[in-house]
Amino acid sequence: MGLRESIPMKFNYANPYPMARLPVFARNVVSTSHPLAAQAGLRMLWAGGNAVDAAIAAAAAIMITEPVSNGLGSDAFAILWDGKELHGLNASGTAPAAWTPDYFQRKYGDGCLTPPKRGMDSVTVPGAIAGWVALSERFGKLPFEDLMQPAIEVAERGYLMPIVVQSKWLAATEELRVQPGFSESFLPWGRAPEVGELFRFPAAARALRAIAKTKGQSFYQGEIALALEKFSDANGGSLKASDMAAYRPEWVRPLAKDYRGYTLHEIPPNGQGIAAQMALGMLSHFDLASMPLDGAQAEHLKIEAMKLAFADIYRYVAQGDAMEVTSEQLLDDAYLASRSRLIDPKRAQDFKAGNPVQGGTIYLTAADESGMMISFIQSNYMGFGSGCVEPTFGIGLQNRGHGFNASPKGANRANLVAPGKRPFHTIIPAFLTQNGQPVMSFGVMGGNMQPQGHMQTLIRMIDHAQNPQSACDAPRWRFNVGLEINAEPTMPAATVQGLKDLGHQIAVINDSYQDFGAGQFIWRAGDPAVEGYVVASDSRRDGLAAGF
Image: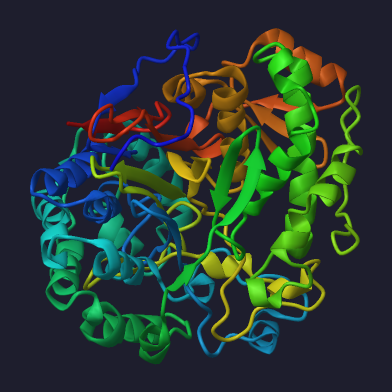
């Protein structure tokens, strides 16, 4: 493959933030939030595999090493550059056949607005395993069974508990120890593992062996599906083996939105990635590059644009064919220009939805020297998901069902629960192109922080030429609701005060894992076989950017 026609970014490699990590430069690269997962991906590249093989192996391994954030019962999404074009994969799960508004109203009362936060009635069909298989069948080079081997080894032999994961594991213990299978799987001594303590997960190794041997069929149509139905029945759930067998991931066309000569691509709804595109569309009407980096003026504008975007997505976004407006209407240039005019540079506001008709997660990324790049994310939603763990196979089940409306009284009628429907989703991979050519595969995990992280880091790289690691390390803010935002302790005091003076209600929070997300970035430096890539991994987690 020849040199791309897009313009190389000349980054500033002086990192002004108090983080220890440096960008990695290589031709074959993997970046994840746990070193063993990154190394699992590199093993596939060394063995002659491509970026998709590396991503699948890393995804399997990180399910074992970071079960707080994801597990065998997770959902997943991916955006892939195959060397010629972009492809999107929606491997988010669907509601069991029994789920209707009446189901939840009868079981939890007329006041039930959403499915429960924890327990089996928060569990939709897990989609991640089917996503792995779909990616492998269409784009992988190595046998699927080979991709599972590093994860199987880690599960069987165990790994020493890392610092950041352990802190979140411990924090979830008291809430979740009552959920079925949780203590048996994740509290092996009646408590959370301590930092540096060996944790083994033989049940998950058993599942991975079955998944590897059958290329996922055992999970959706075999012994694991039957075990999940039995477990669900025993614990008050409605998930059936027939729900598992009926599930299929969906190939989709990523949405595109231009920003200052680049194009940001996100998976279309039922996900929230469109929020980052909407915010950037509004911010394109402001000269952010002329404003001081990390100053209150620019941060205020970003916060206000993000609030406007969230007001719309919480009102309108759901499974695409259920939405009352289209993604194209939400991304319309004239509509976003009209929304940008609502931003007052001198005060914070609490915005409502507009009318566009008139106008606990892991993220990883891999790239190889042939030019293939993949942006991949999988999640069990909140920490440890539903808290329910099928013990025979160690299937930690997500709680994505909590993202549905369970009553027509909910604000977003399009997101009303229905059999076989996908709920509103927070996890979003992202991809950046320029002149139709790949530039960056990236993502920032962490609930509603994800589109906020996409927007904040992109502006740093595009408007201020910060290199990916500096943009990743830089202090972040997180919008919550109304005028409330959180800020990291590393944000300059003058900026915090300046935002307060504009009316923002700021809480400085010293919990980067939970509140401010964590990102992985692969920026293409030129011809991947010659210059390779610039790679970053967020210091807010136990991660690693690695390559050769």
